[in-house]
Image (cartoon, rainbow, N blue to C red; front, side, top):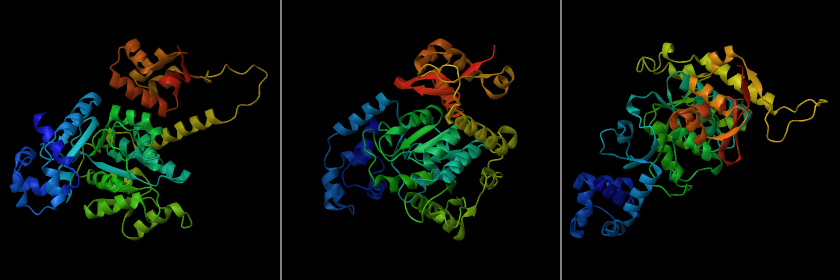
Length: 411
């Protein structure tokens, strides 16, 4: 903990970029030695005057506040000198010196990680395939990495969650600031089964110029980048360009020639990106490298994943469709129409945790904490199961973070 505060001091020096910090580390070896160096020692280095001035500010108030915030929020701090720091990132020309992580700790160098990216203002075509590929890749044993932006990033994450996770999201600001605000609960779901990662400390706004830097981490953690739908410019192409600079594979989903949002992906295919139409088109590229992780025997097939996704989509459409007028009185407000799940369906489709939660909910609304107490299932498993029940359309969230079952279990 003592050493960490010097890392945080170094990475919060105004005007000091990553390359400057790496130069300092090459000379002084540790941030602590940089901190205790005299002003004269900085003169020997090729640094601009304002940056040498920043290094002479020895106030540790900000680093200590960050440490306190991380402890309060349950964030882990990883530095570039840690043994478990991803080698994939360490090889970049400007790797993040510090990573803030909420959730699971992954050994990224041992993961068949694929970054799934796409436009924020997407079409139904893009939304469908972002979710489908997120699901198929996860079901096939890959680790899906994406941002948390509106549009296709969020769709890819939901698809990965639908396949059972885990999934990783790389953020462009503090992990305590939901961005966009509507994705607050999606962030919680990702942290419950996977991880949220940022190089920015808690309290940092998600500013526009952070996103290009975020994109280099997004592609850097992955073996390849899948572009779902985009124009020939913007954030998706920024990530792809980082991937090319980092010698990562690039995949793209084709689109109609007259579709504006497919211009970018069609161009990438024209320039050499691999055209893909299903998750296995990507997984087969890494089968020899990760034979166990990507084994068909250990994962749901892509076809089964697609079938599960289509079933869930049909269920959402059925519940969203207007009801026929009936002579019977309408249900009470906020009481969802509940279909019955047979014993055979329960055994085939639901885990023990999911069944226990549906049983605990019954016809009432409950919070996650109430379900933990009622079922005696650990919080992490309850949150994970709740995520899967929501993406399957079996549970919905009410006001005040209370949950209600949309189904009834056959006795």
